Image 1 (cartoon, rainbow over the protein chains, first blue to last red):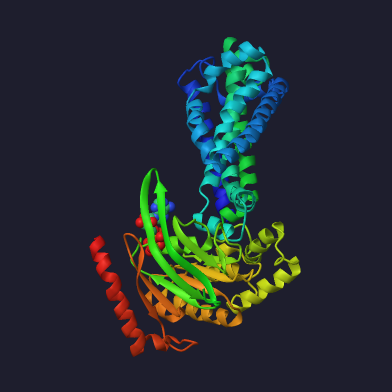
Image 2 (image 1 turned 90 degrees about the vertical axis):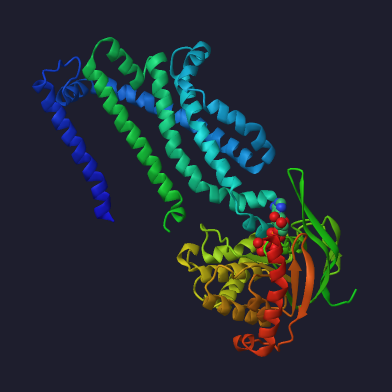
Length: 252
Length: 266
Ligand SMILES: Nc1ncnc2c1ncn2[C@@H]1O[C@H](COP(=O)(O)OP(=O)(O)OP(=O)(O)O)[C@@H](O)[C@H]1O
Ligand SMILES: [Mg+2]
Protein backbone atom coordinates (compact mmCIF):
# COMPACT_ATOMS: atom_id res chain seq x y z
CA UNK A 1 0.00 0.00 0.00
CA UNK A 2 2.67 2.53 1.06
CA UNK A 3 4.77 1.23 -1.84
CA UNK A 4 1.93 2.05 -4.18
CA UNK A 5 1.50 5.54 -2.71
CA UNK A 6 5.18 6.38 -3.00
CA UNK A 7 5.15 5.07 -6.58
CA UNK A 8 2.23 7.34 -7.33
CA UNK A 9 4.02 10.32 -5.84
CA UNK A 10 7.59 9.61 -6.88
CA UNK A 11 7.04 8.58 -10.49
CA UNK A 12 5.19 11.72 -11.58
CA UNK A 13 7.71 13.91 -9.74
CA UNK A 14 10.60 12.16 -11.49
CA UNK A 15 8.94 12.64 -14.86
CA UNK A 16 8.27 16.30 -14.08
CA UNK A 17 11.93 16.82 -13.12
CA UNK A 18 13.03 15.12 -16.33
CA UNK A 19 10.80 17.39 -18.44
CA UNK A 20 12.23 20.46 -16.66
CA UNK A 21 15.78 19.22 -17.30
CA UNK A 22 15.16 18.68 -21.01
CA UNK A 23 13.46 22.08 -21.21
CA UNK A 24 16.39 23.76 -19.39
CA UNK A 25 18.86 22.21 -21.82
CA UNK A 26 16.79 22.70 -24.98
CA UNK A 27 16.28 26.47 -24.71
CA UNK A 28 19.95 27.48 -25.16
CA UNK A 29 20.65 24.49 -27.41
CA UNK A 30 17.93 25.45 -29.88
CA UNK A 31 18.71 29.17 -29.43
CA UNK A 32 15.18 29.97 -28.32
CA UNK A 33 14.78 33.56 -27.16
CA UNK A 34 13.96 33.89 -23.46
CA UNK A 35 11.05 36.18 -24.31
CA UNK A 36 9.45 33.34 -26.28
CA UNK A 37 10.29 30.50 -23.92
CA UNK A 38 12.26 31.20 -20.74
CA UNK A 39 14.24 28.47 -19.02
CA UNK A 40 12.77 26.88 -15.88
CA UNK A 41 15.64 28.29 -13.81
CA UNK A 42 14.88 31.77 -15.14
CA UNK A 43 11.22 31.35 -14.28
CA UNK A 44 12.11 30.13 -10.80
CA UNK A 45 14.38 33.15 -10.28
CA UNK A 46 11.59 35.55 -11.27
CA UNK A 47 9.17 33.71 -8.97
CA UNK A 48 11.56 34.14 -6.04
CA UNK A 49 12.04 37.86 -6.81
CA UNK A 50 8.28 38.47 -7.04
CA UNK A 51 7.35 36.08 -4.23
CA UNK A 52 5.55 38.86 -2.32
CA UNK A 53 3.16 39.96 -5.08
CA UNK A 54 2.65 36.35 -6.19
CA UNK A 55 1.61 35.35 -2.66
CA UNK A 56 -0.79 38.32 -2.47
CA UNK A 57 -2.45 37.48 -5.79
CA UNK A 58 -2.55 33.75 -5.01
CA UNK A 59 -4.34 34.45 -1.74
CA UNK A 60 -6.83 36.63 -3.60
CA UNK A 61 -7.53 33.90 -6.15
CA UNK A 62 -7.88 31.34 -3.38
CA UNK A 63 -10.41 33.48 -1.51
CA UNK A 64 -12.57 34.21 -4.58
CA UNK A 65 -12.44 30.54 -5.57
CA UNK A 66 -13.48 29.33 -2.12
CA UNK A 67 -16.25 31.93 -1.86
CA UNK A 68 -17.71 30.97 -5.23
CA UNK A 69 -17.29 27.30 -4.35
CA UNK A 70 -19.06 27.77 -1.01
CA UNK A 71 -22.09 29.41 -2.61
CA UNK A 72 -22.09 26.72 -5.31
CA UNK A 73 -22.13 23.90 -2.76
CA UNK A 74 -25.01 25.54 -0.91
CA UNK A 75 -27.17 26.10 -3.96
CA UNK A 76 -26.07 22.79 -5.53
CA UNK A 77 -27.21 20.87 -2.45
CA UNK A 78 -30.56 22.65 -2.35
CA UNK A 79 -31.22 22.19 -6.06
CA UNK A 80 -30.01 18.59 -5.99
CA UNK A 81 -32.26 17.72 -3.06
CA UNK A 82 -35.25 19.38 -4.72
CA UNK A 83 -34.65 17.68 -8.07
CA UNK A 84 -33.93 14.29 -6.52
CA UNK A 85 -36.89 14.36 -4.16
CA UNK A 86 -39.64 15.52 -6.49
CA UNK A 87 -40.41 14.28 -9.98
CA UNK A 88 -42.24 17.53 -10.75
CA UNK A 89 -39.28 19.70 -9.80
CA UNK A 90 -37.02 17.36 -11.76
CA UNK A 91 -39.13 17.63 -14.92
CA UNK A 92 -39.40 21.41 -14.59
CA UNK A 93 -35.84 22.35 -13.68
CA UNK A 94 -33.57 19.69 -15.08
CA UNK A 95 -33.84 20.60 -18.79
CA UNK A 96 -33.28 24.28 -17.97
CA UNK A 97 -30.28 23.38 -15.86
CA UNK A 98 -28.73 21.36 -18.67
CA UNK A 99 -29.40 24.23 -21.07
CA UNK A 100 -27.79 26.71 -18.71
CA UNK A 101 -24.81 24.45 -18.18
CA UNK A 102 -24.09 24.34 -21.89
CA UNK A 103 -23.46 28.11 -21.97
CA UNK A 104 -19.70 28.76 -21.89
CA UNK A 105 -19.50 30.69 -18.61
CA UNK A 106 -16.60 32.86 -19.82
CA UNK A 107 -19.15 34.53 -22.10
CA UNK A 108 -21.02 35.75 -19.04
CA UNK A 109 -18.08 37.63 -17.54
CA UNK A 110 -18.70 40.86 -19.54
CA UNK A 111 -22.29 40.87 -18.31
CA UNK A 112 -21.18 40.38 -14.72
CA UNK A 113 -18.70 43.23 -15.12
CA UNK A 114 -21.48 45.49 -16.42
CA UNK A 115 -23.50 44.76 -13.29
CA UNK A 116 -20.82 44.59 -10.62
CA UNK A 117 -17.80 46.40 -12.08
CA UNK A 118 -14.22 45.21 -12.27
CA UNK A 119 -13.09 43.31 -9.18
CA UNK A 120 -13.66 40.30 -7.02
CA UNK A 121 -17.45 40.05 -7.39
CA UNK A 122 -17.49 38.85 -11.03
CA UNK A 123 -14.75 36.35 -10.16
CA UNK A 124 -16.71 34.91 -7.25
CA UNK A 125 -19.85 34.73 -9.38
CA UNK A 126 -18.09 33.05 -12.30
CA UNK A 127 -16.62 30.48 -9.92
CA UNK A 128 -20.09 29.93 -8.50
CA UNK A 129 -21.75 29.57 -11.92
CA UNK A 130 -19.22 26.95 -13.01
CA UNK A 131 -19.27 24.96 -9.80
CA UNK A 132 -22.89 24.48 -8.75
CA UNK A 133 -23.92 22.25 -11.64
CA UNK A 134 -21.84 19.14 -10.80
CA UNK A 135 -22.96 19.33 -7.16
CA UNK A 136 -26.64 19.63 -8.04
CA UNK A 137 -26.54 16.81 -10.59
CA UNK A 138 -24.66 14.38 -8.37
CA UNK A 139 -26.91 14.98 -5.38
CA UNK A 140 -30.02 14.60 -7.55
CA UNK A 141 -28.76 11.35 -9.08
CA UNK A 142 -27.89 9.95 -5.65
CA UNK A 143 -31.39 10.63 -4.38
CA UNK A 144 -33.21 9.46 -7.48
CA UNK A 145 -31.47 6.07 -7.67
CA UNK A 146 -32.71 4.78 -4.32
CA UNK A 147 -33.41 1.03 -4.60
CA UNK A 148 -37.16 0.44 -4.82
CA UNK A 149 -36.87 -2.53 -2.45
CA UNK A 150 -35.30 -0.33 0.21
CA UNK A 151 -38.11 2.18 -0.21
CA UNK A 152 -40.65 -0.64 0.18
CA UNK A 153 -38.98 -2.00 3.32
CA UNK A 154 -39.13 1.45 4.89
CA UNK A 155 -42.66 2.28 3.76
CA UNK A 156 -43.80 -1.04 5.22
CA UNK A 157 -42.57 0.29 8.56
CA UNK A 158 -44.72 3.37 8.17
CA UNK A 159 -41.81 5.63 7.23
CA UNK A 160 -42.78 8.98 5.71
CA UNK A 161 -41.13 10.38 2.59
CA UNK A 162 -39.22 12.78 4.81
CA UNK A 163 -37.95 9.92 6.98
CA UNK A 164 -36.85 7.92 3.95
CA UNK A 165 -35.07 11.02 2.67
CA UNK A 166 -33.24 11.60 5.96
CA UNK A 167 -32.40 8.04 6.95
CA UNK A 168 -31.48 6.68 3.55
CA UNK A 169 -31.56 9.28 0.79
CA UNK A 170 -29.10 11.72 2.31
CA UNK A 171 -26.49 9.25 3.60
CA UNK A 172 -26.39 7.22 0.40
CA UNK A 173 -25.98 10.41 -1.63
CA UNK A 174 -22.93 11.51 0.35
CA UNK A 175 -20.31 9.62 -1.71
CA UNK A 176 -21.63 11.26 -4.88
CA UNK A 177 -21.78 14.63 -3.15
CA UNK A 178 -18.17 14.45 -1.96
CA UNK A 179 -17.05 13.19 -5.37
CA UNK A 180 -18.75 16.23 -6.92
CA UNK A 181 -16.83 18.56 -4.58
CA UNK A 182 -13.57 17.60 -6.31
CA UNK A 183 -15.04 18.54 -9.66
CA UNK A 184 -16.72 21.66 -8.29
CA UNK A 185 -13.58 23.07 -6.66
CA UNK A 186 -11.65 22.66 -9.92
CA UNK A 187 -14.46 24.34 -11.86
CA UNK A 188 -14.65 27.19 -9.35
CA UNK A 189 -10.91 27.69 -9.71
CA UNK A 190 -11.16 27.84 -13.49
CA UNK A 191 -14.05 30.29 -13.18
CA UNK A 192 -12.33 32.73 -10.87
CA UNK A 193 -9.09 32.74 -12.90
CA UNK A 194 -10.95 33.34 -16.19
CA UNK A 195 -12.76 36.26 -14.65
CA UNK A 196 -9.59 37.68 -13.09
CA UNK A 197 -7.82 37.51 -16.41
CA UNK A 198 -10.31 39.77 -18.12
CA UNK A 199 -11.91 41.82 -15.36
CA UNK A 200 -10.03 42.18 -12.11
CA UNK A 201 -7.28 44.14 -10.42
CA UNK A 202 -6.02 41.30 -8.28
CA UNK A 203 -5.51 37.55 -8.43
CA UNK A 204 -3.16 35.27 -10.35
CA UNK A 205 -5.30 35.65 -13.47
CA UNK A 206 -4.84 39.44 -13.31
CA UNK A 207 -1.10 38.99 -12.61
CA UNK A 208 -0.76 36.89 -15.74
CA UNK A 209 -2.77 39.31 -17.84
CA UNK A 210 -0.45 42.15 -16.74
CA UNK A 211 2.66 40.01 -17.30
CA UNK A 212 1.35 39.21 -20.78
CA UNK A 213 0.83 42.83 -21.73
CA UNK A 214 4.35 43.64 -20.44
CA UNK A 215 5.84 40.77 -22.45
CA UNK A 216 7.10 39.44 -19.11
CA UNK A 217 7.11 35.81 -20.26
CA UNK A 218 8.93 34.60 -17.16
CA UNK A 219 6.29 35.99 -14.82
CA UNK A 220 3.48 34.63 -17.00
CA UNK A 221 5.02 31.18 -16.77
CA UNK A 222 5.52 31.68 -13.04
CA UNK A 223 1.80 32.42 -12.70
CA UNK A 224 1.05 29.28 -14.67
CA UNK A 225 3.09 27.15 -12.28
CA UNK A 226 1.40 28.73 -9.28
CA UNK A 227 -2.00 28.00 -10.80
CA UNK A 228 -1.04 24.40 -11.47
CA UNK A 229 0.16 23.96 -7.90
CA UNK A 230 -2.98 25.55 -6.48
CA UNK A 231 -5.24 23.46 -8.68
CA UNK A 232 -3.56 20.21 -7.66
CA UNK A 233 -3.61 21.23 -4.01
CA UNK A 234 -7.31 22.12 -3.97
CA UNK A 235 -8.23 18.94 -5.79
CA UNK A 236 -6.07 16.91 -3.43
CA UNK A 237 -7.63 18.38 -0.32
CA UNK A 238 -11.13 17.52 -1.49
CA UNK A 239 -10.06 14.07 -2.66
CA UNK A 240 -8.77 13.40 0.87
CA UNK A 241 -11.96 14.77 2.44
CA UNK A 242 -13.99 12.51 0.14
CA UNK A 243 -12.09 9.41 1.23
CA UNK A 244 -12.37 10.31 4.89
CA UNK A 245 -16.08 11.04 4.83
CA UNK A 246 -17.33 8.10 2.80
CA UNK A 247 -14.90 5.27 3.49
CA UNK A 248 -17.77 2.79 3.33
CA UNK A 249 -18.26 3.45 -0.36
CA UNK A 250 -14.67 2.51 -1.27
CA UNK A 251 -13.52 -0.55 0.64
CA UNK A 252 -15.24 -3.32 -1.26
CA UNK B 1 -65.34 -14.20 7.82
CA UNK B 2 -63.59 -16.90 9.86
CA UNK B 3 -62.04 -15.55 13.02
CA UNK B 4 -58.59 -16.95 12.32
CA UNK B 5 -58.02 -15.39 8.88
CA UNK B 6 -55.05 -13.01 9.05
CA UNK B 7 -55.27 -11.98 5.39
CA UNK B 8 -58.32 -11.96 3.18
CA UNK B 9 -58.41 -11.02 -0.49
CA UNK B 10 -61.77 -10.54 -2.20
CA UNK B 11 -61.96 -10.23 -6.00
CA UNK B 12 -58.73 -8.28 -6.00
CA UNK B 13 -57.57 -6.75 -9.26
CA UNK B 14 -54.72 -4.41 -9.98
CA UNK B 15 -53.74 -2.46 -13.08
CA UNK B 16 -50.54 -0.51 -13.57
CA UNK B 17 -50.96 2.78 -15.35
CA UNK B 18 -47.75 3.97 -17.01
CA UNK B 19 -47.77 6.73 -19.61
CA UNK B 20 -51.42 6.07 -20.33
CA UNK B 21 -50.82 2.35 -20.92
CA UNK B 22 -52.72 -0.09 -18.75
CA UNK B 23 -51.08 -3.34 -17.65
CA UNK B 24 -53.51 -5.76 -16.06
CA UNK B 25 -51.23 -7.34 -13.49
CA UNK B 26 -53.63 -9.35 -11.30
CA UNK B 27 -57.31 -10.13 -11.56
CA UNK B 28 -60.03 -12.01 -9.66
CA UNK B 29 -57.84 -13.02 -6.76
CA UNK B 30 -59.78 -14.25 -3.73
CA UNK B 31 -58.14 -16.16 -0.92
CA UNK B 32 -57.67 -16.39 2.81
CA UNK B 33 -54.54 -16.94 4.82
CA UNK B 34 -54.92 -18.50 8.27
CA UNK B 35 -53.14 -16.68 11.09
CA UNK B 36 -49.71 -18.17 11.67
CA UNK B 37 -49.64 -20.01 8.35
CA UNK B 38 -47.27 -19.44 5.46
CA UNK B 39 -48.56 -19.43 1.91
CA UNK B 40 -46.50 -19.40 -1.26
CA UNK B 41 -47.18 -17.94 -4.69
CA UNK B 42 -45.50 -19.58 -7.65
CA UNK B 43 -45.99 -19.02 -11.35
CA UNK B 44 -44.33 -17.82 -14.53
CA UNK B 45 -42.34 -14.60 -14.57
CA UNK B 46 -44.54 -11.53 -14.85
CA UNK B 47 -47.70 -13.22 -13.57
CA UNK B 48 -48.16 -10.65 -10.82
CA UNK B 49 -46.64 -12.32 -7.76
CA UNK B 50 -44.66 -9.30 -6.60
CA UNK B 51 -47.64 -7.07 -7.34
CA UNK B 52 -49.83 -9.22 -5.13
CA UNK B 53 -47.28 -9.00 -2.32
CA UNK B 54 -47.19 -5.21 -2.55
CA UNK B 55 -50.96 -5.07 -2.52
CA UNK B 56 -51.05 -7.08 0.70
CA UNK B 57 -48.44 -4.75 2.23
CA UNK B 58 -50.52 -1.75 1.25
CA UNK B 59 -47.70 -0.39 -0.91
CA UNK B 60 -50.09 -0.50 -3.87
CA UNK B 61 -53.81 0.15 -3.72
CA UNK B 62 -56.18 -2.33 -5.33
CA UNK B 63 -57.91 -1.21 -8.53
CA UNK B 64 -60.90 -3.37 -7.59
CA UNK B 65 -61.79 -5.62 -4.68
CA UNK B 66 -60.68 -5.46 -1.07
CA UNK B 67 -57.84 -6.73 1.05
CA UNK B 68 -58.47 -7.23 4.73
CA UNK B 69 -55.60 -7.73 7.15
CA UNK B 70 -56.35 -8.49 10.79
CA UNK B 71 -59.99 -7.62 10.21
CA UNK B 72 -59.33 -4.17 8.75
CA UNK B 73 -59.38 -3.13 5.10
CA UNK B 74 -55.94 -2.14 3.80
CA UNK B 75 -55.93 1.55 2.84
CA UNK B 76 -52.23 2.49 2.92
CA UNK B 77 -48.88 0.94 3.86
CA UNK B 78 -49.32 -1.40 6.81
CA UNK B 79 -47.05 -0.84 9.76
CA UNK B 80 -46.91 -4.32 11.20
CA UNK B 81 -45.20 -5.84 8.21
CA UNK B 82 -41.68 -7.12 7.66
CA UNK B 83 -40.39 -7.40 4.11
CA UNK B 84 -37.35 -8.99 2.53
CA UNK B 85 -36.38 -9.25 -1.12
CA UNK B 86 -33.94 -11.07 -3.37
CA UNK B 87 -31.62 -8.09 -2.95
CA UNK B 88 -30.90 -7.70 0.79
CA UNK B 89 -30.57 -3.88 0.47
CA UNK B 90 -28.67 -3.29 3.70
CA UNK B 91 -27.40 0.23 4.33
CA UNK B 92 -23.64 0.01 3.65
CA UNK B 93 -22.78 2.94 5.93
CA UNK B 94 -24.31 1.27 8.97
CA UNK B 95 -23.03 -1.68 10.96
CA UNK B 96 -25.13 -4.84 11.12
CA UNK B 97 -26.54 -3.74 14.47
CA UNK B 98 -27.42 -0.25 13.21
CA UNK B 99 -29.10 -1.81 10.18
CA UNK B 100 -31.26 -3.85 12.52
CA UNK B 101 -32.07 -0.77 14.59
CA UNK B 102 -33.39 1.12 11.56
CA UNK B 103 -36.97 -0.16 11.95
CA UNK B 104 -36.77 0.80 15.61
CA UNK B 105 -35.65 4.34 14.80
CA UNK B 106 -38.55 4.84 12.44
CA UNK B 107 -41.14 3.35 14.78
CA UNK B 108 -39.88 5.47 17.68
CA UNK B 109 -39.97 8.66 15.64
CA UNK B 110 -43.54 7.81 14.72
CA UNK B 111 -44.49 7.27 18.36
CA UNK B 112 -45.09 3.54 18.02
CA UNK B 113 -45.49 1.78 21.40
CA UNK B 114 -43.46 -1.18 20.11
CA UNK B 115 -40.32 0.91 20.35
CA UNK B 116 -39.41 1.21 24.03
CA UNK B 117 -35.75 2.06 24.55
CA UNK B 118 -32.60 1.37 22.65
CA UNK B 119 -31.10 -1.10 25.12
CA UNK B 120 -34.09 -3.43 24.80
CA UNK B 121 -33.82 -3.36 21.03
CA UNK B 122 -30.10 -4.01 21.09
CA UNK B 123 -30.72 -7.13 23.15
CA UNK B 124 -33.42 -8.22 20.72
CA UNK B 125 -31.10 -7.64 17.77
CA UNK B 126 -28.34 -9.68 19.39
CA UNK B 127 -30.73 -12.50 20.24
CA UNK B 128 -32.09 -12.55 16.70
CA UNK B 129 -28.59 -12.55 15.20
CA UNK B 130 -27.80 -15.54 17.39
CA UNK B 131 -30.86 -17.40 16.09
CA UNK B 132 -29.70 -16.92 12.50
CA UNK B 133 -26.15 -18.02 13.30
CA UNK B 134 -24.59 -14.56 13.25
CA UNK B 135 -23.81 -14.19 16.95
CA UNK B 136 -21.22 -11.47 17.50
CA UNK B 137 -21.68 -9.90 14.05
CA UNK B 138 -23.23 -6.72 15.50
CA UNK B 139 -20.35 -4.43 14.69
CA UNK B 140 -19.38 -5.83 11.31
CA UNK B 141 -19.98 -3.86 8.14
CA UNK B 142 -22.41 -5.30 5.56
CA UNK B 143 -19.66 -5.32 2.92
CA UNK B 144 -17.67 -7.78 5.03
CA UNK B 145 -20.49 -10.34 4.91
CA UNK B 146 -21.16 -13.05 2.35
CA UNK B 147 -24.37 -12.99 0.31
CA UNK B 148 -25.99 -15.56 2.58
CA UNK B 149 -25.01 -13.65 5.71
CA UNK B 150 -26.42 -10.41 4.27
CA UNK B 151 -29.67 -12.15 3.46
CA UNK B 152 -29.84 -13.38 7.06
CA UNK B 153 -29.36 -9.84 8.33
CA UNK B 154 -32.08 -8.69 5.94
CA UNK B 155 -34.40 -11.36 7.40
CA UNK B 156 -33.55 -10.17 10.91
CA UNK B 157 -34.37 -6.60 9.89
CA UNK B 158 -37.73 -7.82 8.59
CA UNK B 159 -38.48 -9.58 11.89
CA UNK B 160 -36.94 -7.32 14.53
CA UNK B 161 -40.08 -5.31 15.21
CA UNK B 162 -42.05 -8.55 15.59
CA UNK B 163 -44.38 -7.92 12.66
CA UNK B 164 -47.48 -9.99 12.33
CA UNK B 165 -46.92 -10.38 8.60
CA UNK B 166 -43.69 -11.46 6.98
CA UNK B 167 -43.68 -10.84 3.23
CA UNK B 168 -40.83 -12.42 1.29
CA UNK B 169 -40.24 -11.84 -2.44
CA UNK B 170 -37.82 -14.44 -3.77
CA UNK B 171 -35.67 -13.88 -0.69
CA UNK B 172 -33.27 -16.75 -1.33
CA UNK B 173 -33.12 -16.68 -5.12
CA UNK B 174 -29.62 -15.21 -5.30
CA UNK B 175 -28.09 -17.77 -2.93
CA UNK B 176 -26.33 -21.01 -3.79
CA UNK B 177 -28.28 -24.26 -3.34
CA UNK B 178 -26.71 -25.20 -0.01
CA UNK B 179 -27.12 -21.78 1.57
CA UNK B 180 -30.67 -21.67 0.29
CA UNK B 181 -31.53 -24.94 2.02
CA UNK B 182 -29.94 -23.62 5.21
CA UNK B 183 -32.15 -20.55 4.93
CA UNK B 184 -35.27 -22.71 4.60
CA UNK B 185 -34.41 -24.46 7.85
CA UNK B 186 -33.64 -21.10 9.41
CA UNK B 187 -37.05 -19.81 8.36
CA UNK B 188 -38.62 -22.84 10.01
CA UNK B 189 -36.65 -22.23 13.21
CA UNK B 190 -37.72 -18.58 13.27
CA UNK B 191 -41.34 -19.61 12.99
CA UNK B 192 -41.01 -21.82 16.02
CA UNK B 193 -39.64 -18.86 17.99
CA UNK B 194 -42.36 -16.38 17.14
CA UNK B 195 -45.70 -16.32 15.44
CA UNK B 196 -46.14 -14.54 12.15
CA UNK B 197 -48.22 -15.05 9.07
CA UNK B 198 -46.02 -15.51 6.04
CA UNK B 199 -46.44 -14.79 2.37
CA UNK B 200 -43.67 -16.13 0.16
CA UNK B 201 -43.14 -15.43 -3.52
CA UNK B 202 -40.75 -17.85 -5.15
CA UNK B 203 -39.66 -19.53 -8.37
CA UNK B 204 -38.34 -22.52 -6.47
CA UNK B 205 -41.06 -25.15 -6.18
CA UNK B 206 -39.09 -27.14 -3.60
CA UNK B 207 -38.81 -24.02 -1.51
CA UNK B 208 -42.56 -23.51 -1.70
CA UNK B 209 -43.20 -27.11 -0.65
CA UNK B 210 -40.74 -26.87 2.23
CA UNK B 211 -42.01 -23.60 3.66
CA UNK B 212 -45.69 -23.26 2.85
CA UNK B 213 -48.89 -24.82 4.07
CA UNK B 214 -50.74 -23.67 0.96
CA UNK B 215 -49.29 -23.03 -2.50
CA UNK B 216 -51.07 -20.87 -5.07
CA UNK B 217 -50.05 -21.52 -8.66
CA UNK B 218 -50.67 -18.41 -10.75
CA UNK B 219 -51.13 -18.01 -14.48
CA UNK B 220 -50.17 -14.90 -16.43
CA UNK B 221 -51.93 -12.25 -18.55
CA UNK B 222 -53.61 -11.22 -16.36
CA UNK B 223 -52.31 -12.83 -13.19
CA UNK B 224 -54.90 -15.17 -11.73
CA UNK B 225 -54.84 -18.05 -9.31
CA UNK B 226 -54.95 -21.15 -11.46
CA UNK B 227 -54.45 -23.91 -8.90
CA UNK B 228 -54.31 -24.27 -5.13
CA UNK B 229 -52.39 -27.01 -3.35
CA UNK B 230 -52.37 -27.88 0.31
CA UNK B 231 -49.00 -29.23 1.39
CA UNK B 232 -49.80 -32.05 3.76
CA UNK B 233 -46.25 -32.89 4.86
CA UNK B 234 -45.90 -32.97 8.65
CA UNK B 235 -43.96 -30.18 10.36
CA UNK B 236 -41.19 -29.56 11.22
CA UNK B 237 -40.21 -30.43 7.70
CA UNK B 238 -36.95 -32.02 6.66
CA UNK B 239 -35.04 -31.82 3.42
CA UNK B 240 -35.45 -35.58 3.11
CA UNK B 241 -39.22 -35.09 2.78
CA UNK B 242 -38.62 -33.12 -0.41
CA UNK B 243 -37.28 -36.29 -2.03
CA UNK B 244 -40.23 -38.39 -0.85
CA UNK B 245 -43.00 -39.56 -3.15
CA UNK B 246 -45.58 -37.01 -2.00
CA UNK B 247 -43.40 -33.94 -2.46
CA UNK B 248 -41.96 -35.18 -5.74
CA UNK B 249 -45.43 -35.76 -7.16
CA UNK B 250 -46.63 -32.32 -6.05
CA UNK B 251 -43.58 -30.59 -7.52
CA UNK B 252 -43.98 -32.44 -10.82
CA UNK B 253 -47.67 -31.52 -10.94
CA UNK B 254 -46.98 -27.82 -10.30
CA UNK B 255 -44.22 -27.79 -12.91
CA UNK B 256 -46.73 -29.11 -15.46
CA UNK B 257 -49.23 -26.48 -14.38
CA UNK B 258 -46.76 -23.63 -14.83
CA UNK B 259 -45.13 -24.78 -18.05
CA UNK B 260 -48.06 -24.44 -20.53
CA UNK B 261 -48.56 -20.78 -19.76
CA UNK B 262 -44.82 -20.25 -20.20
CA UNK B 263 -44.98 -21.67 -23.68
CA UNK B 264 -48.00 -19.57 -24.50
CA UNK B 265 -45.99 -16.44 -23.68
CA UNK B 266 -43.00 -17.56 -25.79
N1 LIG C 1 -44.07 -0.50 -11.83
C1 LIG C 1 -44.71 -1.11 -12.86
N2 LIG C 1 -45.26 -0.37 -13.84
C2 LIG C 1 -45.90 -0.97 -14.86
N3 LIG C 1 -46.06 -2.29 -15.00
C3 LIG C 1 -45.54 -3.09 -14.04
C4 LIG C 1 -44.82 -2.54 -12.93
N4 LIG C 1 -44.41 -3.56 -12.16
C5 LIG C 1 -44.84 -4.68 -12.76
N5 LIG C 1 -45.52 -4.41 -13.90
C6 LIG C 1 -46.17 -5.39 -14.79
O1 LIG C 1 -47.10 -6.12 -14.05
C7 LIG C 1 -47.03 -7.50 -14.35
C8 LIG C 1 -46.74 -8.30 -13.10
O2 LIG C 1 -45.47 -7.96 -12.60
P1 LIG C 1 -44.87 -8.57 -11.27
O3 LIG C 1 -43.62 -7.87 -10.97
O4 LIG C 1 -45.90 -8.57 -10.22
O5 LIG C 1 -44.57 -10.05 -11.75
P2 LIG C 1 -43.86 -11.23 -10.97
O6 LIG C 1 -44.79 -12.38 -10.98
O7 LIG C 1 -43.35 -10.78 -9.65
O8 LIG C 1 -42.65 -11.56 -11.94
P3 LIG C 1 -41.21 -12.14 -11.57
O9 LIG C 1 -41.41 -13.58 -11.24
O10 LIG C 1 -40.44 -11.97 -12.84
O11 LIG C 1 -40.67 -11.32 -10.43
C9 LIG C 1 -45.97 -7.64 -15.43
O12 LIG C 1 -46.62 -7.69 -16.68
C10 LIG C 1 -45.16 -6.39 -15.31
O13 LIG C 1 -44.69 -6.00 -16.58
MG1 LIG D 1 -41.39 -10.48 -8.82
